[in-house]
Length: 335
Image (cartoon, rainbow, N blue to C red):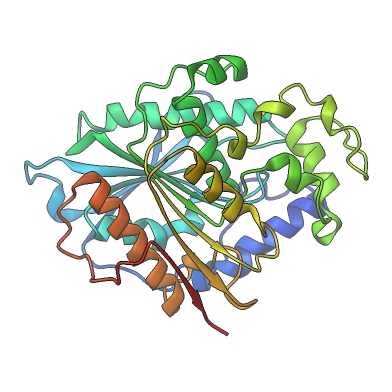
């Protein structure tokens, strides 16, 4: 079992739930591995925190000195905003590396240890650090993909919103964003945080989680959510504009955590004329973050669809890409 960075500290109910999701999901999510992939662990991308501001760099061994620039993917793990660890996303990172991407899979500071905006700032520092990585590796800084799952998809969308709206970035007090993403991959995420926090009380932990995320005691009926200083600036579904980069999305239609969030975000992209592709699945078995379990046919189909979209957008020559059926909005059902 993987250790937790906060091991030895008491965890409340919300932390226990999200930690359990990672622990029990570890084996099926990391059951597939790809040969010829190099992993350089724990590269510091910021000096703000030596424990959390670290990333693992994955790439094909043959790409180390091949003299060709390759795209890079910044990956942001999920975990309900308050848990999670890059070590639970090994197979996911290897998958993208197998397809010719450098992958920077990061940890970051999380609430309640830091504010939500400080959490956002770590993500900005990570994308800015890609310029430093490009000095030592064959990375094309003009082909940066940002991807994340669950709350990591939310943070991915917030990074994009801030990168393509400098007024928003300034309002949130974020550092300068030196590199804009060329594409996004949003995986089973949440995009209307206000709506999610006001919705069903997942395992009874939503009010507790909201208090940790927002930094003050949120009432059980969520009636004081409006007291949060940035309440109107924390839902990326309302922050999409026509400047956004091409975006791939997937979701589980009966998601136990983020039901309805994917289609709402896809509509926002559509309404703003943003190039995008979506892939969704039905059935309770194929549920939240199903795409991480690459031994499942639906997960493999989703990830192949994702890599095809990214390769097309970036004009990336990927010798490992498998043929897919061209269909802008395919939905699969597995029971």
